[in-house]
Length: 97
Image 1 (spheres, rainbow, N blue to C red):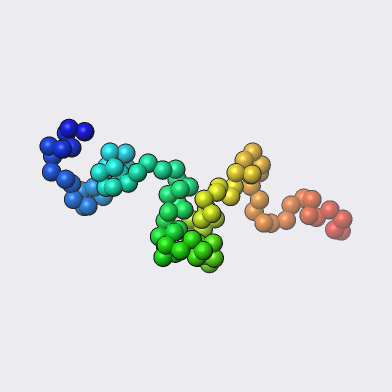
Image 2: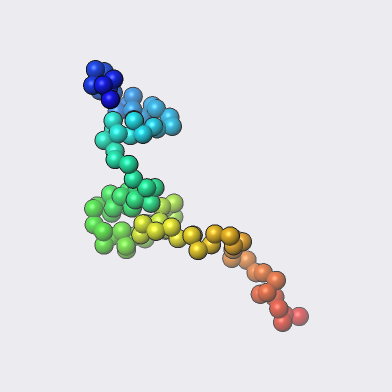
């Protein structure tokens, strides 16, 4: 920490150039540690003009974050199961000549 106090603060451009971002850079940029789901929820809140009720009503279904906007992982119940593609399966064809 003493190292940071003696050095001049980095610019936004310098902070953005660090790839991948480190915890130190994130702190320097003003971020606090949080889970990925909380980060997604915070971004949805920002995108919805800081109105939680708008997060719930979000219609941006093509957004990669949309399924996670409630702060819960929507696919946890699928762990260990084969993914479904929406196509017909062998069971769907039973009884069809």
